[in-house]
Every structure is written in C-alpha cells, then in structure tokens.
View (cartoon, rainbow, N blue to C red):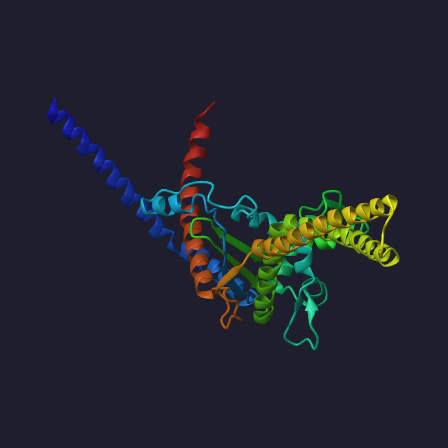
Length: 375
C-alpha cells in the first residue's frame, strides 16, 4: 500500500514537471511576441517618464505643547515609567490631535489656502493658488491626453453644467449658522489641493507633519508654511475662544461698573463739599446712603478689576505654543517623477502582459475545443 502511494506521488510530481517544462517551451516559442509587447510597454513608460511634469515636495514638522492637569501629573509620571498611560491627563479645553485633519479638510481652511500668494518662476508678481491653476499652469501632454481620453465623459458633462451654479457647504469652524458658497471652479481646486496636501498626526509621539507637493519649488514651500500657520491659527482660535469670550464679558461689566463707580464717587464728593457741617438727620442719612453706594460699587469694581487681571492671565495661559522641529525649506530636488522607476514598472507590466497573452491563447484554444465537443 505504501509503495503504491509513493508511485502515485512520483507520477504526480512527474506530471507537474512535464507541465512546467511544456509551459516554459511555449513561452520560449512565443518569445518574439513577449519581447514586442514588452518593448511597446517600455516605450510607453519612456513616453510617460519624459512628459511627466516635475513635482516638488516641501514639508514641516511641529509639536503642539499640551497642558497637563496638576492632579494627575505625579501619578502620570510614575505610570509612564511602568509603560502605563493614564487617561485624563490632557486639559479638556485642549484641542485633540485627531481634530487637526478635520481642520485641514474644513472649507474655511481650504479657501484660505486657495488665496495664498505664491512666487512662480517667470511671473513678475505673486499669484494665488487659484490664479496659478486658472491662468498660469500648463498641464502638459499627459494631462491633456488623460483629459480627452479617460476624462472625456467629464468634459462632455462640463459643457452642460451651469457655470453659475454654486455648492452650499456648511462651515465647520465659523458660526454654525453660516453658509459658505463654493463655486464649481473652487470645488475643483479644493479637490486638487486635497491631493497635494498631506497631513500626518502622530498622537503617540505628539508631532504633526505637513507635506505639500507642487509643480514649483518655492511655491511648494510657501504653501506648506501657510498651511502650518493656518493650522496653528485655527488651533489657537479653538483653544482661546472660551477664555476670550469670558474676558470680553468681564471687560463689559468692568466698564459699566467703572462708570457707575465714578458717578457715585463724584456724587459723594459733591455732597460732602456742599455740606461741610451736617447737623440734620436727613443730611446724615443722605451721606450714609451715598457712602454705602460708594462702598458697594467700589467693592464690585475692585472685584471685577481682579477678575479682569486674572482672566487676561488665563488667556495667555490658554494660548497654545508650538515647537517647530523641522522648519519649511525650499526643495532643491524634484520628488517626482522618478523616471527610471517608471520605466522599470512599465517593462515589468509588459512582461506580465506578454506572458498573460501566451497563457490566454493557450487556455482559449482549449476552451474552444471543449466548447465544440459540447452538443
């Protein structure tokens, strides 16, 4: 029984070897076809590599400083030594790192980036992101071919699309009742911007990285710097909004009580000047009333002055700080296209297509024979 099983396994291995040899022989016989297909793909890859537009990548990395609660700072330090992260160490008013991508994807942030002034080679004055893609940028041969081949349905649909039709998008970072109107052109530019802007948030290490890819090196750096500044400004607005509102409220009350206190002070002084020797009960009662009003307003006014000073300190305390680990620099070398890699990929695709064609012909013939036998 064992011997029969061994003979069966040997027979299967022999058949597999014969199939592999037969397959290699078919590939060898069709080597010219495979070579032609590979050469076609190689020339196509060369065409793509030559006519692809240069892209430059600028980046920056910064760390938002997080304020910890004093109540858990000691326990948190001991727990961190044991590799344990105690929750609740971050102030509830601190912006969460997970919210930074929401800020970047918000319409106000993106519209602000569209208006960033950029220095473009060959242009005497700075142009915005929108002006660059509408009036300056030349898409190149590949982009034109893609537009009028793969993107041809979109071109036809664009002919029937109303230019005055706007999209209404609810703002995320302004007033909840505010609506922002985004035109079709702006919407297309925002989609392009989303492909060029990359945000990486590392909540564990606590850093935020921004990368921008753009056809112009200096403009790529300017766009990255603007994105960093906007992101920090949005975080600053989020963090200090509550304390600034409280400060504005205290300032209003302080100004009101200051006016009332000055009136009470003048009224008391005028009454004392006019009544140097008060001998009547009515006069003494009037003086006590004015003195009481003065003391009450002075107490309220003094308390508001203390609260005003404390709230001004609170606003400064709530103002987030950012440490830039990697400042923005103008890229010297292009990040894309990697022409040699493109050619290698297309050659590899050509080989796969050639081998696939040979196998396809073989199995198509066998399928055709089996189909003919079926009655």
